[in-house]
Amino acid sequence: METGSPAVERKPAGQPHILWRAGALVLALLISVLIFVYRDQVVRFASYGYLGVFVVSVIGNATVLLPIPSLVATFVTGGVFNPVVVGIVSGAGMAIGELSGYLAGYGGGAIIRAEDRARYARLESWMRRYGGWTIFVLSVIPNPLFDLAGIAAGALHYPVWRFLLVCFLGKSIKGLAMALAGAQWLEL
Image (cartoon, rainbow, N blue to C red; front, side, top):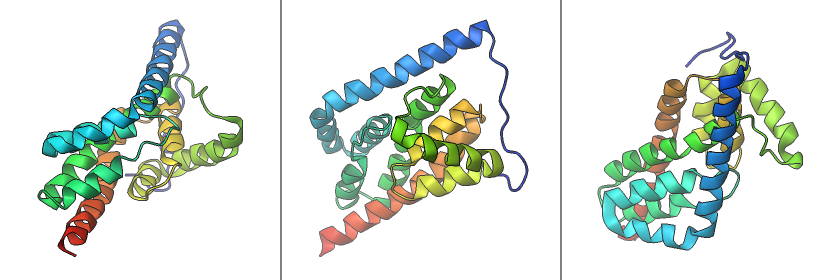
């Protein structure tokens, strides 16, 4: 993670990039709509143990600007299985799921609602100045702003491997906290 220096820069868009960007945006929107429509079935995956937590975490975080509570599955399974493993598996799934927001940003970020434009502009500014630190802090804290940060990272062509790594670290901390809370709650 960087400090102080410009973290990302825009690349000029050529014809092949336009097709890739349009496809990425359509894919991100399609994933979000499908997950929102089938959200009740998504929660059932948690009963499949670690794999279930991973799948629910991927799916729950693959929605762009539509809330699907994957942390509930992490909390519940943390009380049944090893909470450290649940937290790490959940963090990996959440990070992978956040690629949909990144792809939406890479595809142009056209899905940003009018009421979110000011927040997006602020997050894009933070991404330019602080890069990975913005992703890390927002991925640790449960909040709806992370989708906008992922979109900004994609729009600014922040390196995808770095986005995934920093996101995994932050989301794993959040997943671990939820899984340990679930384990404590079960003991009570």
